[in-house]
Each structure stands twice: as structure tokens, then as C-alpha cells.
Image (cartoon, rainbow, N blue to C red; front, side, top):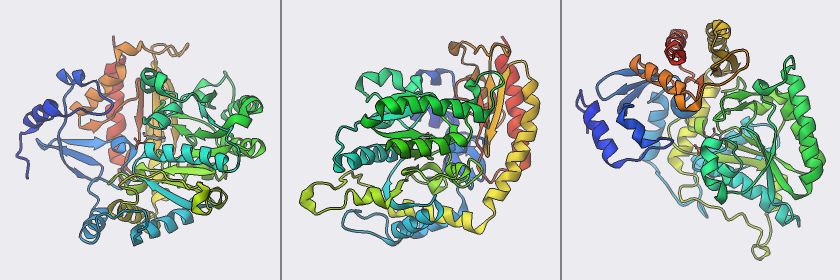
Length: 454
Ligand SMILES: Cc1ncc(COP(=O)(O)O)c(C=O)c1O
């Protein structure tokens, strides 16, 4: 059904009558507009009245090669006419087989087994359960705990939320959740004055060692977002933390779960963030960019050694029985294959390096802004930390919702920015141009001026 022009208001009204949106206090929509998007075109979203918005956050960090990317859309259409779905237990299909082969080929060494699920949180559930179950199968049922980093975010199903440390999402449900041990993140923003990112990482690894000395015997795994803790405020840390973490996990017989759901597929500057520390985790969780932003799909990669701990005669009761109806959905697998083909066919990472350098150059002047405490960047992720007082880094009272003002300013000026609290960040699709980056930054700068005023 084609949507007639000048229909934003009518669609928003119908939406608000029945729909309940994620990550939203629905009451906000008494004043904040609901934006009905009719179509996408490259880095742009076009609403039902024909207004265009530059997608500065890749629609929750999923999109890589543009909205309605014709190459991915064609692969999807072809697959839809061939095989849309089939039960993935006892049956298989070529898109899943090829996807597993390709993921094993491009991910860090040693990750030879691929378990599919259908969203990021589900991948985290799989990794947590697999780690626990591995130790159980090995006769270590006493390992029932997990270690997570302060400021981490791994999703919002109960297991994934359990190992997350963002109060906004976790606090309400705390009585329902597992309790992980929290290790302090090597977040550079929280470093001591004068401390280098590498020194912060070393100090934090020392604290992790102390935690492991006390609790490794009861710990299955430590889960981390490699290099950038995204939903926790785009907090960044030095790669040496990951190499140190790998060594500690080996020393203390604890699994290393790398959640690259947000930072995988080129976001961090390398195809996978773990590459920057030259480490292979025991579990690698992937989603979001895996399908170029087209369809929900996730993958958990693990080692042959872990796989073998489950491989036994049926009545031994060691199988990993976790399942989702849409596991291995052929449409999603085919779209993922096409996304990975773009990485093979085009100089994506090289192009991103140029775009990231341009973004860095444009953001640099903000370091001197009286309400900017930090400007940080890792590859195609950049963030600006707004504060009430630059010297003490005192934040604005959360209730003032300064970031929301930046969001509203962006909407009015055709740019989708969605600050995390008062942290304004940029995570554009890789098809963005330098001129479009200029538009993102210029709009953010004016938005920030409005936001920090009394
Ligand atoms: C690092 C990380 N892990 C897990 C998730 C959860 O993924 P999903 O929203 O697909 O459940 C997210 C989502 O933002 C994420 O950033």
C-alpha cells in the first residue's frame, strides 16, 4: 500500500493508538513527535511527508551499507522466492552453510563452530548458557557465576540484562536477575588524571586478577564489549586490556566471551575489535551489522574444544538443546552473505579510515567547548560527553534531559542523532559521504549549543 504524502500526523496517530515502542516512555510522545518512515535511501530515511533525515546512528547501529541497499535487497528478494524458512534441527540449507564457512574464515583464529540465533540478546543467552554447560559437562558444576564489566550492556532479556551494568535498564528488574561479579572497566574517561589509556588498562587488569584469585573457581566466563562499551555511553578502552584479559582467562580457566554485536563488522576500524589486541575469545557474539541492518540474525562462534565437550552419545545428556523457531532463517543468512560479499568486493575498511579521519577532524574543535568534557573516537564510533562543569566534569542533572534537546534539534534539521543521556554520538552507515558527516557534525554542534543553555 503506498502512503499518501502529508500523512505523518495520521500515521503517528494510528501508531500511538496501538503500538508500544522499545526504550520509550510512551508519555513522551505527547510532546516528542513520532516519525513515520516511509522509505530509506542510502544514509537517509524519508518520512511519510517526504522529509529526509540523515541516519547518524545507523538505526541502532545495524545499518552498514545504506537503507534499502539494492544489492542486499535483490539477494533477499531472490531468497524469498526460493526458500523463506525451514526448521533448522535435522534440516539445513546452503545459505546457513555458506554463512558459517564465511564467518569461520573471517573471524579470529580458532573459532570454528557457529551457533545461530535471531537477535543480539539471544546470542548472549546462548554464550552464557554454553559456557556454563561446557563447565558442567566437564564436571565443574560449581562454576555458575559470570564476571561483567562496570558500564557494560549486553541486551535486555533476563540473562543478557543480568550481565549488563546500565542502571537505567537493569535496576527495575534486579530482583529477577543473576548477580555477576563486576570488574571495573578500563574506560579511559574514568582514568586518573595523567594516566594513559594503557596504564588504565594495566591497573584494571590488576583489579581483575584480584577478583579472579577470589572467584575463578566459581566463575564460568567474563563477558566484555571489546574496545567500546556502547550503550553504557560509548566508553572506550585500550586494546591491551583485551590481551591481558585473554591471558588471565587462560591462567584462571575462565571463558572469554567477546560481545562484538555492536562493534563487529568494521565499526572499530578493524573487521572485528578483537583483532586490535590480536586475541581470539572463547565465544564471539555477532549480530546487528551481520545482515547489513536488513534482518534480525545473530551468531555465536566458539572453538572445537568447547564443541567437543557437548559431543557425546545422546543418552549422556550433554547436548546443547537451546533453540529458537527462526534459528538459521534462510532469508537472514542470505542477506548476511550478501553483506559479507560487499566487504570482499569493496575497500570498506580503507574507505572507513578516510571517513573516520574526517569525522575526527570535524569533532576536534569541540574539545575546547566549555560544556564538553571529552571527545573520543574508535573507528566509525565517535562520542561527545556533555557536562554542566568542564573542570569537575560534573554532569547535568539527568532530569534536565539535555541530550533530548539535541535529538529534537536534529529532527528539526533533518538529522537523526539519539544521544545516550548527555553523550552525543555518531555511528553513521559506511555509505555516508564527507559532506554528510559535515551535516551531522554541524547539526550536532548547534544542537549542543541549544542543549547546554539554561
Ligand atoms: C554490545 C551489545 N550487545 C548486545 C545487544 C543486544 O542486541 P539486541 O538489541 O539485538 O537484542 C546490544 C544492543 O544494542 C549491544 O550493543
